[in-house]
Length: 157
Image 1 (cartoon, helix red, strand yellow):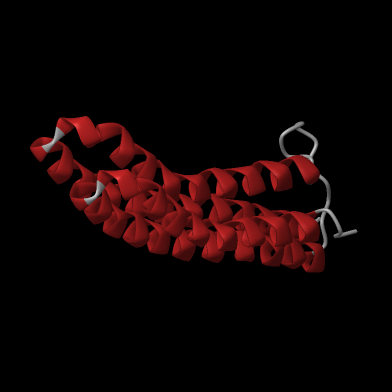
Image 2: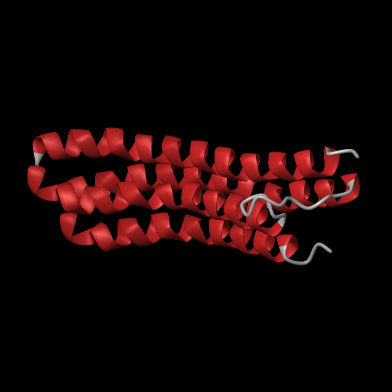
């Protein structure tokens, strides 16, 4: 019995969680650096800066969700993994790629956008909502990647 199909599916789950998580860590870190400078000058802006810093972290959660959904779908979490053909394993691997790469790149882009938003908070704190909206627009593409990965995972026979 070959386990290649199962291995490929697990690699997909790992990539979704890992790449989206790395992107989120990078994005949150970028905003955190800028926010630390702002808060050191004006501690009253902490909550507005924190909201911007949290935004790029969602992609890591989406990647984790895809990994858990896939591992559950193939029975690995219940302790009774399915026997998967190589083709099925490749399909599950492919299903994870939108979230893996979409999560990585959107988290980094969102981090950059939110970092620029820290400048808005620094100069015009009453306009922080505009900075949040700009950063949240990038989230749209992470949500689309999440959706397509879910749809593919649950439609593989």
